[in-house]
Image (tube, rainbow, N blue to C red; front, side):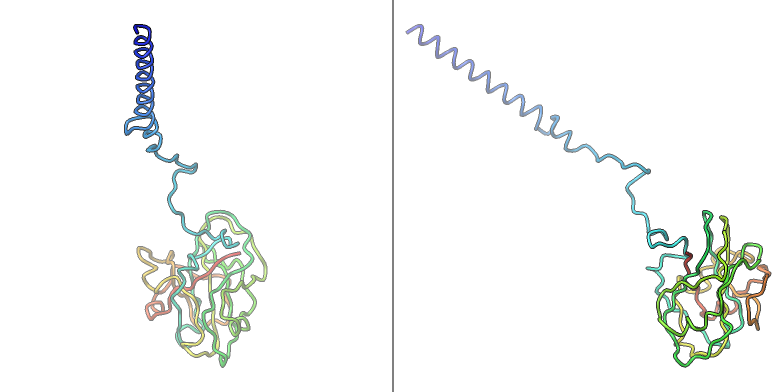
Length: 238
């Protein structure tokens, strides 16, 4: 009897010890203060590059080199009469952050006028000193077809160093005000907040032009036409 009692006592003690071991493992590894809970609550590692915040689209995402704004935001349609903008040089500022070879100016054509009579219409690029760096051939035919975003080639590509440039648009001819329309990234004068000539983001210079002049005086930038609703056009570079 004594031997049997001893065996039972020893077996019971071993079972209790095993239970205590199991309880301890659960408490230290999976409980609210254990290693398991601590590991599950640990913050995710910060990825390289300074953070995981959203970064908006870049021109390179769409095989472009630069733009005046994300084309996804270019919803405002620009319309103006031939009497209002015909013969004026309309300027939209663009700032390059790196050197590029500038070959094309992309224009967002929103609508066409099949009855328009267009001629002597051009796109060009002026530098911060007002010197014409390059221009297209007459773009009148391209303004009569395909209301889409389209690249219009410069007659001669040029190397553009980082800095400020102005994309110039010159329209001539006759068209219906609400038919020939362009995509825009701004509602006009608001794009010039905080700016004065010769650094306006959107402006016009000169009148009565039939070609883009070799130089323009950016100190003469005007917003009088801009204020009538000739909203800032969307452009891109490739």
